[in-house]
Amino acid sequence: MNKINNILKSKKTFFAVMMCIGFSQKHFAEAHISGLFHFRYTDGQKGADLNSTAVHNDSMGFSIGQMNLFIEGDISKNTYYTGEVVSDLYTNDREERPFRLRTASVTMTNLWRYKSNVEFGKFDTIFGSWTERRLPIDNALFSAPLAYSYKVHLSPNAGFISPAVRNIGNSDIREIGIIGPDITNTGAKLFGRVDDTKLSYAFSATNNSLSNSKDTNINNSINIAAKLHWDADQNTSFGVSASQGAYLNSLSILDPASPQRDASFGSVLGTTRLNTSAYLQTLLGGYINYKYGRLQLNSEFISSTFQVPNLRDDLVVDSFYVEGKINFTKEFFGAARFDTLTFNDDKYRLNNTLTAVKWDDNLTRAEIGVGTFLNPSTLAKLTYQTTDFDLKKNRKDFDLLSGSFTVIF
Image: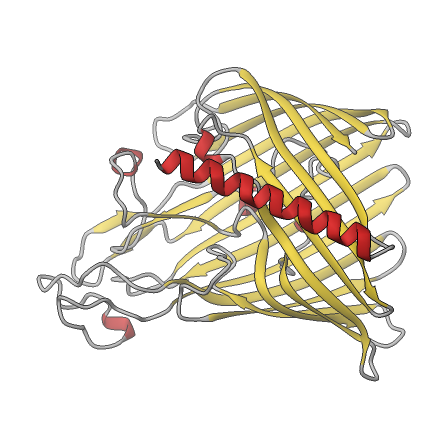
């Protein structure tokens, strides 16, 4: 019955989108529709892709990675709408394949004396610089950087959850990315350029944190984000970003045997009630983009701090990557990325114990690839990726080889 409901839900979403598209084509002459189809072959080992249980299961095979449908159009002279429907098909589970509305927003431009713009709805996050290169047609390599793809495993008791515990289906375990894989938020955004300068800005107020972004607010907090971007010249730009919001709200029923549970966030509640404190995630980041001739470089540093139940101190993870792309010809290019995640203070102590517990393992990823445009609408890529986890007595790297085609229509 659940499968039938999911299939019907998926079809209803798809038909609703098609009806909206038909309506927009009829009523708005400026409506534009485009799409993207991503097909790939992968061969690698478990752990090569970080969400290995759903994405890569230690076997070779073909997959339709993703389908995207984009629509945009003018409502009036200074108002336009945009939307994106996506179906992620990486998994073999049919229940994970519905069409869904990734973004849907309306933007009003040239408001007030400073000609600011306001967008409301569901839109790309303003944090960082990866959103500009997130699509397979723009991403020269296999996957997103670790900050946008790695999943942190946190339990209500804080800290790292071993794979054995994850696999028993513990509903209290929360798997969240440092920045959610959709890289979207629901709320309102103010953005624009400061007069005629090279400085642009963006501010947003949205539901939940970037790591746990939901369409509705489930975490008792509004996420506030800000971004400043400077275009130094035609070849160089850089910026800084900040974000803070709640990634965790209610805990499991409080354990009377642990009287200091949640002591850092207020008095202990009764054993039959849920704690409604908002545990915050704070992100700080900076990036730089550079072009010189046929060479393109992108680099980003992100630090994420989690407030965690039962913990005296916050948990901090830092991410850094640098990637480069060189165009040998107009159609043929090569690319590489070096990527790290560092878990600061990976040995922590709970409030009610002196025992040190490990949070997570540092990891390093390297990736190289080549690509060529077979025609203006079709990109073929071949990439090799290796991931090294900083584990004692573990000398094994997790390798992955992938070939893909991305078609624009």
